[in-house]
Image: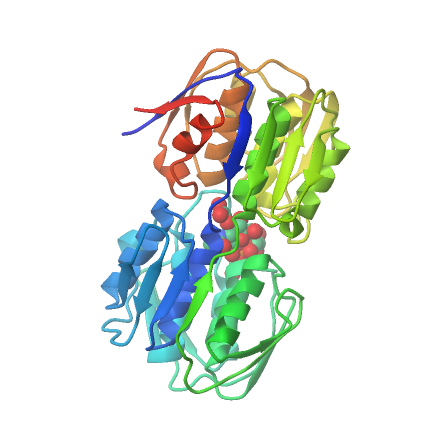
Length: 416
Ligand code: EPU
């Protein structure tokens, strides 16, 4: 089992580049099943979740070829199975994204409850309700959902919960349904808009993506297409937080500042100095103040940045309330942060209070999920002494060769 060994306390300096967004690349990969024509995806990050998704698609008979380091070609002209592999799906929540194009193209899909990060209850009711609204029949037996429909039919559907992958799934399913689908209470995340842009380039008729109301006019045959993944806003945000909390001077390059407004707001309130350029952001700081945060759907403060921001709050002057509104299990990682020396009071599963600044001390830690894993790296880089982070698979799921990229800006981190 690989681990990271980190010696904290060093000032970092220089430029770090952001990779393509994991959650954009994953949905575009899945959407390639909607067409029998080739799909090309540029700027795909070299991360474990992409490998798992490729393996899942391979088992369905889809040809996924890595043409060069960052470029993939996908051809789904002969789908040979509609059963999503149980073992891989257990490791990847995004496996649920494959259900929509399989249902739309093949009229059937069988799949287990998806796994992925253990951050709280992650139901799939909105997917099932959505497919039913499009005319599908849903059955559940021995741990397998079977969804089938001779033909999907356009409908009006209001999401019971605002769901990113749920919105993406309904866009995909509706894009080849008969007639028009009106979706309300949709997620507005940039990854949703990016998916709609890609599908529209392939001939789909989707309007309103990026707003709560999306209209999809179903079409018969979707073409292939070419897509460049949007920059990973969560990776960019994590690097900005790292720069601010470690009192370093960093430039985060190849990012989309527009997608980071809520974080930039919080960082500025905390006293960090931010300079926004067209596709890069510079950060530096000397002395941070506490800021209350509440995670929200986009354009609110992203739940995926809650963990690294908590690390920043341990180094900020004053008391901050962190309210995680999306997942009830996404604050439990802070127990280890407390053992590193943070002063954190748990109020309930959704809320903690952090008092700062406190000195963090290096420890041996287990990475529980992608984002908490990144937060432990940030904490270890700010801590006194050595930290060991085990279970780095969780970090490799979402961040490409993170140790190599951090070494380039002066971090003392190695993989053993
Ligand atoms: N929800 C339901 N029913 C559903 C689906 C969701 O009640 O059928 C609830 C969830 O329990 C949660 C809320 O809706 O409280 C939001 O969940 P959402 O469905 O939006 O999450 P997701 O689509 O499964 C995506 C990202 C996550 C990110 C969330 C929130 C992908 C592949 N995953 O998950 O990313 O945290 O949106 O922004 O796009 C990560 O990258 O580390 C990650 C966990």
